[in-house]
Image (tube, rainbow, N blue to C red; front, top):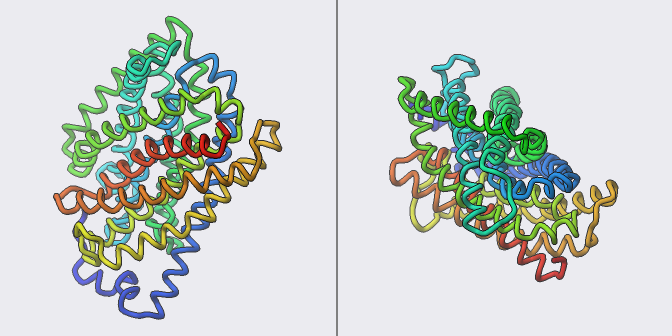
Length: 420
């Protein structure tokens, strides 16, 4: 984390928000608008990704276990680039952000770290997915090489898209005065859905091709190992710190996401019977995760700048932030349901009806939002108190816990409404 320029925070608009009531109202309205616009764009993008998933029914059947990868692959994009966005947002607030392609700069080291983590963790995710399928008795399923190739190549393809968006948003925040804490998490996590689902489907074309798939699998594992070792030992301090701190938390997050994938994979027949729910799935997980990501990013910035205290009992300021984020959830979840229903009807996918989808989304969304706000606060607070970077730890844990909880709450809501 770069050093905060002396006296900078005293003239910050963040401080003005607390010192002048009129500014507080205005800034709050701006925050709400920025969040709602970002979440709306994200929901549309995630719904498009869900539509691709629902349309890939044949691929899901031909490559059993593919759906197991979806929550983890989607979450990995959000975990890696959401953390990048949060770090860049803090750099913007502290005045250390410079848009430069130099490998030793803030942007350069963050993007190199994201590339290494995407490659290495995607390969690990493929291996763990195969192991998870065996442990939970999901059979028949793809081979180990199939899992590794689909996860890694699909992940890299999606990461290129999300990486460009992340840097573009950071540059746009400087140019147009956006608050990255409001827009980065929603757009990166949900645009990651749009990129990841089609990327996995495209990468699946290389699966089940005997010798070719085996050779590709060995190649990507070797490349991932070499890249990880090089980054782990690099003389670039920020890159080394990012990789070393990120690997443990992303590994834990990956395990949680795979358990979420098991939950979804085991309900594949029910999901194919109501394909609108498959359209809904990425938007639901992405939106709830984005809400937690917004709170985590805001708290991280406030803790770094000394504008709030990282205490076990949330302060009034932290509670206001959580309440503000939670209130945006209701209209966005309603929008998820409406888009999923309309998209399904327009493309000939099966749907249980708009009323049932609304009930499912509101039930699952209420539980998931409450839990993700709790996780966002305590993960970010604990990371800061123990001297770790909350930008690196907060978002991955929020998104992954949400994926696990969200998958369960969505399935339970489907059962409660009678859709599944």
